[in-house]
Amino acid sequence: MSTFEIKMPKMGESVEEATITKWFVKVGDKIEEDDPILEIATDKVDSEIPSPVAGTVKEIKFDTDEVVAVGTPVAIIDLEGEGESEVEDAENQEEVKSDKQQETKKSTPEKEPESAEQPVKTEEKESADKQQSDRFYSPLVKSIAREEGISIKELDTISGSGKDGRVTKNDILKYIETRGSEKAPSTEPSVSASSRQKPQQPKSTQTIQAPKVSAGEGDEIVEMDRLRKLIADNMVMSKHVSPHVTSVVEADVTNLVIWRNKVKEKFQEKYGEKLTFMPMFTEAVAKALRDFPGVNVSVDGYNIIKRKNVNIGIAVALPSGNLIVPVVKQADQKNIAGLSTEINRLANAARNNKLSNDDIQGGTFTITNFGSFRNTIGTPIINQPQVAILATGTIEKKPAVIETPTGDVIAIRHKMFLSLSYDHRVVDGALGGMFLRKIADYLENADINRDV
Image (cartoon, rainbow, N blue to C red):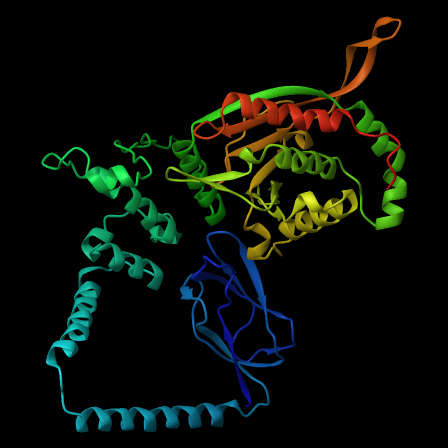
């Protein structure tokens, strides 16, 4: 064939659609293999999509800001300059096929009117829905609405967080979660037998409204970009879902600092990577998660899901001012060199908008490094559906009392604060405190003679 279809790629197991945010090409442009052709955005990550073939852009099927289902062709590439005739041939074949289907329908008697009635009703309903609403809804949102019995009229009442107020998958799922609580069950029995047998996630009984804010003279109004909107919604959701508790310890990381200063040049010569403190923090957390698996969990209603893998997310600040959390998979199975290589790869990919959807999926715990901005202590918000997040503060020289065989002495030591926010539904103070102390112990007991 002389033409090739560029299809919307699948960016993860749970991703069914994506928004086209930018086209790098226009009809008639010549492209080479691996040239970026368009940029897409999902609820998780923005990605550039390269062309798998070389040729000439013959057709662009969707405009910027349109939401497209996974697997749908978005562009046609002419490989040999003969695509026009082949496209016409394909259209002719489609017409012949369509004519044959029409003839088959006419010649086939209707055996069961009842079975043919349902599609007609569905088409009429969809037609009526389109007439009732001027808003655009993606195929995924419409599918969820149909499954939950949400009419277009009801769908129109949902506030959307997408571009131009568009309703996203997260918007409709959040609406479904609180939908039942908005109806006063005055005539229903207090507790049904089925509810007692299978307890569900408690639902909010009150809708919290943000205060109305007006701009004053000289104030500037800047709309949040797509990623900042997602961050804002997720942070509010996390505080609403998880009762946060934060514990803090101060760790003496003098041995760790001495070891890093001693081996960092040798490490870079050997592995071609800069040795930061983050791989050591990640290693300590991974070991502690294996020691305390009760922190490496997620909550689903009244069920606790114990995670098999230790996948640690590392919060990365982007040049845009936003934040993203790429994930180091199986962190407990990597040594310092492996952790350093993977963390540097993910950080560079994040800052250059090159993360894949898989790079930010599957995290079971998160680390955020406040110390990179010379902050000492923080109370981070849990990255759902995880149940804990660690904030690492800046490392500072401090006077400290040291016990020696000949008595106590005051010495200059390298110290830092570690703060752990955890979900008090499943992580109590004892577990959270012991887990945090274990991380500090691993850092304090670093071997200054460790080889790289």
